[in-house]
Length: 356
Image (cartoon, rainbow, N blue to C red):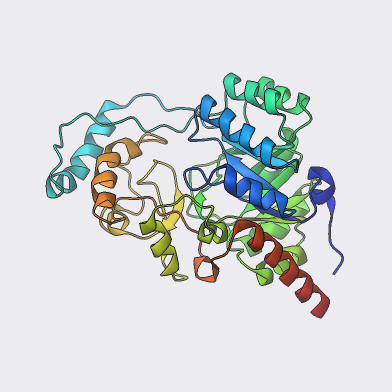
C-alpha cells in the first residue's frame, strides 16, 4: 500500500503517529516520550495556566529537540445562567447529602480556558512546530499570530462540512474525529451529536472533501486500526486512549483500573462532567443522571458542582463522580511506556503492511 507521507513532511516527524492531547491526563513527560520515539507528542493547554504552560514547555524543550504539538480549546465562554446552575445543584443534591457534603456550600469554579492573546504570546515565545485546536479555530487575528510563528495549524472535524470549514479558514491539516473517540467531541458547526458518523464512514468522506492531509482519530489502538486508516486515505493517525495505559499518563488509580476492565460497549457520550459531549467509561453518575442531560450547565461550567462529589468519592477509592475519559477501543490497550508504545505500534504496522 503506498503511504501518504504529507504529514511527516509537514510536521517534520519520522512516524505518522500523533499522541492525542489529553487535558488532565498527561503532561510534558508523555509528549517528550512520544516525540523522542519519532511520533508527534502533544501538550494539552486547556487546563493549564500560562505560568504552568511555560514551565511544561520549558521542560519539553530541555528534553527533546523533536517537533511537538501544543493544543488549545477555542470555545466561547458561556454567559452566567444562575437558574440553570441552581437546577444542576438541585439534581446533584441527593448525592451531596449521601456523601455528607453541604448542598448549599460554595462550589469551586470549573474552567477550561479558551485560546486568547496571552496564549498566543506563549506560542510566539516557544514556537511549537504544530498548534492544534478543538472546537473549530480561534478568531482570525489570533490565528494569524500563530501562523506567523511558522507553526502548522490543525483542528478536529466530526463531519465533512466541518472539515471543509477548517480548510477554508486556514487549517494546514485536519483530524477526522470519529464517533468512537474518547474525550470531548470536536463538534463546532452544530450541537447535535445524535447523527455523528463513525471513523470508517467519516474518514474517506473527509479525505474526498479537502485537499489538505487528514489525520484519523477514534477507535485506533493497534496496528490493525492504523493500517485500516491508511487504506481509507489517512496520512497519519492520532491515538489517545492507548496512551492512557502508559506510566506517563497522570490519571487516577480508579481511572486506570476502569480502563483495564473496559469493554467495547462500556463507554458513552456524556455532558455531565463539563457541559459538552465527551466519551467516557460509564460510571454511576452517567447511569443515574444521564449520560446526556438538559440540566447540566453549559461548557465548561458543569464540573464546578461536581468537584466536591468527585473529591469525596475519589478519596474513598471511587470513580462514581469522575470523568473517566476513554474511547471505544480501550480493551485493546497495552501497558508499556509511551515511547515504547509508539515504536511498537509502528513496527507492527510495518509488519502488517508487508503482509498485505
